Image: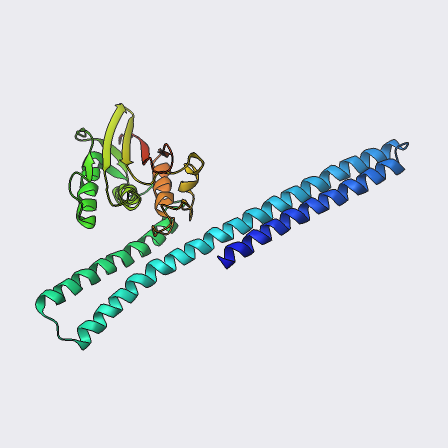
Length: 301
């Protein structure tokens, strides 16, 4: 909280400083014009020089404010990653110390092993998110092959149900997906993209989850993947920002949800590299969200 207050004061300082400098420049320019109003050349030169100074001050202030906000997002990301790494490590250490110091029956030991494996999976997932965020930037088209997208989505849904112990009604297909929807792409990246969308829907749906997945082919050249949840939703102003790196929706409902702010950034990067686009839709907070991925149905020649 103290850091956020400090950043806010810094931004306010630079805005105030820029406004003061603009005021000084205006005063000096008016003085120059009053003193030289009968001399055309100095008057024109003064006006041009004044415009350049004002533009420079405005651009400098905008740049400084953007840098401060970018640093704030990076700090938030580091804090989130630190928490995501520290929590499972602390849990695993605690269970290992308990196993070392106490005699436990077989049922307790199995329960401890299960929890430690879940914590290890969470730790590995965080590391993979950070690594994947670095890999997806500027990567050339390689390792592309024919991918059965409909089968890939079905596998991702089954894995998400298993990972989060969800019943079929909590995560289901809203309609029967067409079979053999083939596209040309990287199967590993496409699997990561779908998994991140499902993970995001599960994470932001609250305890009463109802997530509907749909794969469509509206025309011969386009594939649509729609993931709709009944969760926290978001304001319209957040719909484009959520795909930025490190960005997370800030609201009272999502304040307790942990994450790195990289999942949807990875989704957008993968989709764009495959020639598609992803959009988010929401009627507002508490109204759920819908994510729509559009991919070109490219065939190998």
